[in-house]
Length: 177
Ligand SMILES: C[S@@+](CC[C@H](N)C(=O)[O-])C[C@H]1O[C@@H](n2cnc3c(N)ncnc32)[C@H](O)[C@@H]1O
Image 1 (cartoon, rainbow, N blue to C red):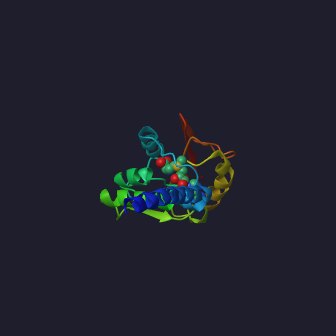
Image 2 (image 1 turned 90 degrees about the vertical axis):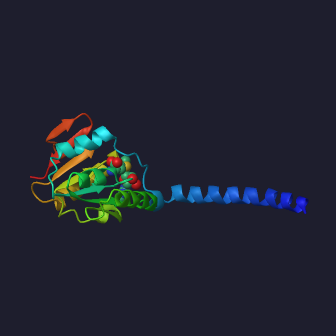
């Protein structure tokens, strides 16, 4: 009896390990399951981004690639109506949970959706922390869709052609004129 348990253990443990490894490998090979690497804006950058955008109570903010919802939550706590677009299901789950725990469900929403397919025309403020490769195409989308007066704040990455209004450290502010 003991021997059969030992043999079963010897077979099932490697099978389980292989199964977990394969699941993890698939997650990281298919971008829609995890999105590009997730690095949250730190507290200082989050504060600075919202300050530079001069976010007002009641304004609409969208964070493009909202990660764990940090910026969406910080904006909602300042009285904005904030939306996040995020293509990683696990990060969407985490951020929705954080929003619920913070009692902000009436002010903050996270969409499991690529920001490329989001209509950005209704927003007053856009925040982003994406990648060098994304910025040229994102510049075109924002200039096409944003209303005059809308502000864009980017962590770390600058647009290639759109001149920034202000730069503080690694935060860039843009104004849709
Ligand atoms: C560097 S993190 C920034 C997270 C958050 N904005 C912050 O500043 O804390 C970039 C996020 O964008 C997400 N992302 C990348 N491309 C995306 C796309 N096309 N649509 C939605 N989310 C995307 C990634 O999954 C990741 O969570």
